[in-house]
Image (cartoon, rainbow, N blue to C red):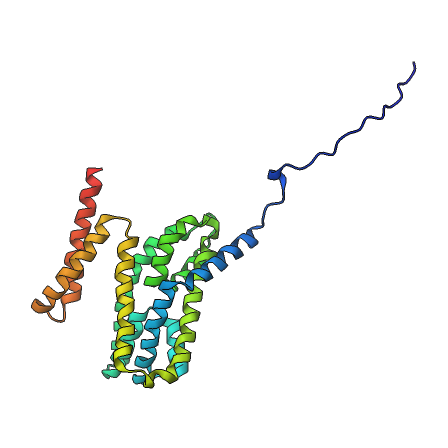
Length: 261
């Protein structure tokens, strides 16, 4: 039986479809989001926080800290109010146990922030140790930025993004305190006080804008109203009382809204 001769058929090359192109590795993706977190640190909120640390450098100097100790305090404690409490307690001559208790008590306010942020950071492969380490960077500025932007970040890259944001804020402000420490005595006290006030004003407006529920805004309004009133009636216990009353009322509003749904 004759065998058919092969024909000179021309086959066109098969080009890969766009979806078959090699995908970017997880490492590259995480690096990109880490750098985006670094860029977010160099923003208006980050710069406002730097101005507040200019004021803290002068306070640390007055409290008797040298430059290295002041810089270390920024990295180890990080939250600015806790550092102010520690410096003020040292200036007042308080003992070590009293100072430690005051710093710890001032940092308890960060616990709800950690609880609110961690579920957004956790991915399917996120280790618990990673979350513990990232919790150190939780302060008002990093928390507000993260709550406003984290949901636009792929879940598996969120820890990298927040690490870039938090670590950059810490290192940036450590550098600011180290650079300004020697210049602090030459700055007028009015300028130092004004720089301190910029941060709480930013905190208030940012927390209002980033609030996801009406209850958070109710708590802020009640705190602003009750604070001065309770300061007159209960001096020395005004802040805890305002927090208990305002927070309790805000929680009641939250439960009422939830029941209506």
